[in-house]
Length: 359
Ligand code: DP6
Image (cartoon, rainbow, N blue to C red; front, side, top):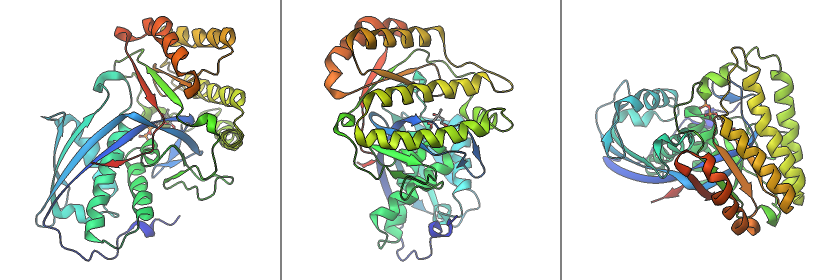
């Protein structure tokens, strides 16, 4: 794998002081990444919708110092110093050391905030780490102004992946594939790429309402969940199935076969959770209200001949997906019939978005 392309060779400029602010989104996988090997290489290819409203805004101030052995940074989350978030970021800086050696010549001050409540159960690692990666690439661009926009996006995704796999899919939009797949031109295990084919208009401006079923800390983190795919009895067939599902979904996204989309996306969500149910040790992240919502969605779909469907990430929250043309009736359905299964009736209406934005 060609990682050498991401080791900087020329840094022509000297920058004493700089500050960059990026807004990067969360994403929701349609074909799931669950299982990886070192260093953050996925066991199968995945694809996600980039979101629009759920995002992180991060500013990094860089101040030149003498060369350091470990990254020197202060971290503020929503205006307050957050020592407990530092180890994950320190580990990230260590992992990218070879690719961003220049950051060890700066004192960094990081300010970060999320558009969604921190305790919402919405994973912030995708938007959080992609935002940091994008700020690092802004510095690299100033140090080497010859870099192309295409390379910068690719390397930002490459760096984000080293922080959190799904973060590699949070640089661009509206659909991003991460993981090498024979039918997706340009796809790579090292970084996410925009879905390279024309997408049917039914998937334009697709809606995602995130129902906050459980805002508590998860009993089992994604990191542990991924590890449990080693020696998992169904791992190999799962990885093969995911790659086959991506082949199918690629065609569906192009031809607009919405019923096939619903079938595949819901099956992916339930298969992800089936992997958790059959891990050793086994675990359950769905809650009773997750199942209540799924059943309501199925009934509504049948009774209203609707194209509503659901997906799940590694938690109890339900992502309700529907075409923009059904926005009004489905939003009414969510408010009247589903919100009662959410903690404090809370849900977040989001739509598909286009990726990182410099502020
Ligand atoms: C279920 O990207 O959070 O959301 O690489 O260990 O940081 P790490 O894992 P993470 O795993 C995401 C798992 C998922 C599926 C997906 O987003 O594809």
